Image 1: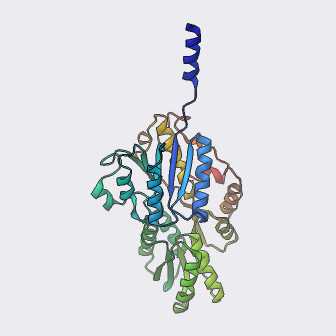
Image 2 (image 1 turned 180 degrees about the vertical axis):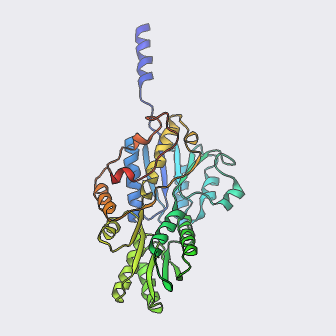
Length: 349
């Protein structure tokens, strides 16, 4: 009897722990290329890390996003972790909704603004189940794109700019970077900044109406690739040759940078969701990411890439698994590591 009982205990002890479950409240459209790719890389990371991941799309609509959050709360089996972005500044509402849920919350891609945190506190404060955040260097990306575009521009140069959705942190931060670069280049005049809502068609319509008013404009700063391509199409129809910035990792953007149709391209933020899953994987394993860079981490995945790097990244991103093992970035494999790395550099080697 005793050996049989001992064998049973040993077999139960050796059973693998149930994989931690994660739900991501994706704020984007379910047919939006950027957010689809963003989720695809997260699924790749989840597979590498042994996590259960589910993605719910908010369709860029506040009501839909909140309905998704309520649906998660009604489940008999709630996830261990919930990832959310502060798009449309809905972060405080999500925190209030999930306060007593038992779900650990993590803000990804955009977190609560300083003003919001003054009112309700930061991570692990008023809402102790809000355990951390991970955001990218959006302001720096906007600045680097503009600085590269404006470098060497003669006096009297003119620029138009296309930002995203007005009430999104990513758009606001990239705009701030643009204005920082403009302050360093007083010889360049910003004629107008428009909100293209991240969409090609919207930016195309705006550029068709805008560009004839400003015949001296030679440069277009755009906060993403879709708006850059919309402006590019309008300029082509109007017989204008302009220089453009863009930000993204779409195949079209990478090809355009490789071919010189984009003067400046920033990318790298598409890995951010995968990096967040590494942090949650470690947290579930008892290795708190707060001890490796802090509970709130701002990383620098966004960087400019040249034509050669664009070709290399295009080849790597065509692979179904991205070519990265996200488990290699985990503290479970590197217990002595002091900080997480979140960079596209391994994809460019």
